[in-house]
Image 1 (cartoon, rainbow, N blue to C red):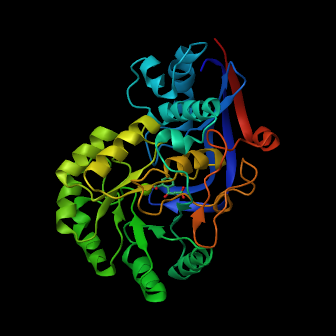
Image 2: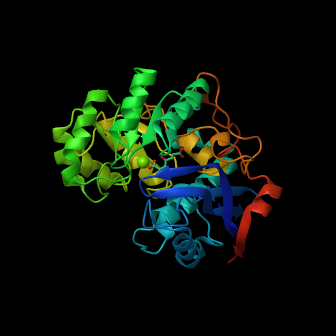
Amino acid sequence: MRIEAVDLAIVRLPLVRPFETSFGRMDARQFVLLALRDASGATGWGECVADADPFYSAETTSTAWDVLSKYLVPPILGRELAHARDLPGVWPPVRGHRMAKAALEMAAWDLQGRLDGRPLGELLGGTVRPIAAGVSIGIQPSAEALIDRVAAELADGYRRIKIKIKPGWDRTPVEALRRRFGAIPLMVDANAAYTPDDAPVLAALDDFDLMMIEQPLDEEDLIRHARLQAALRTPICLDESITGPAAAADAIALGACRVINIKPGRMGGFGPSLGVHATAVAHGLPLWHGGMLESGIGRAHNLHLSTLPGFTLPGDVAASRRYFVPDLIEPPIDVDPNGFIAVPSGPGIGVEPHAGRLRSATLHAETLRP
Ligand code: OSB
Ligand code: MG
């Protein structure tokens, strides 16, 4: 591939309903969208998962824009690359900024698939097949409101329910869901809202046979996660802490988790994700694919990676209509009555933005050329 131009846009899409977590409430998604234009006329798409605010992670839309336009995009402009996997080798030694790196790296993989005429999932080593889908449900105003949401998601076929928790909203919603829905596949995500002093509250959740507790403690606290895991029967799943293959290996060696949530958009792209996948599979840890409220572009990338064999649990990769109506892509991504999502077929990610919708959702755009 030879990239002749990169279009960068800041895109804003209102969410169909607010999404509340322990770190705040979101009403819209604002992200950097990349288009890599190859000399052959093909275009690869990438969506940066960094949000407008630094609450889930340190990176933001602004930092991603800055790092992409100053450091990551210029060295690839006009340069011949044998394969998408070679991209990180041409970057200057930028520390961190994994979300910015991921957006560009994942766009290069989409382009690679289009140039090869193959679906991205196949290039990554997966077998393109329908993906088991779960949902992530934000903090609700009451247990009754939560029960109504869960009932609607189960009726749509979703195969696993994840609810967001925080101190003060943990036992009550879990107890209410178990009482109303019995033994459904249920898990919770704390987004790092607890401290080691909260261990008794988390241990009390052992009574409810949760599939796992996701990221209870701070992202840098692998050792405290290991101590907490030793005190719990419920498996801990790490999300924010898994910054790449080294962190995954450390977490497994320490016993800090028994499940891993892979988000390529958070961990620097498909290269690092394949590394985490291999490490987890080698140690027999179950994996699932996370989500970051992506538009159809990022969602399609996630579906393709989800076709790898290590993803044995339903992921947070749900239908477009739970997030955006209309989505940036047409047709939107849908779920079947059994809770499976078809991976878009066709070369690369198999979808592209609807031109008119992209234009009206774009807040700012620039094109970089050699
Ligand atoms: O922690 O998994 C998370 C959304 C934004 C940021 C972090 C997370 C989430 C979700 C939603 O849980 C997953 C999705 O439906 O895309
Ligand atoms: Mg999470």
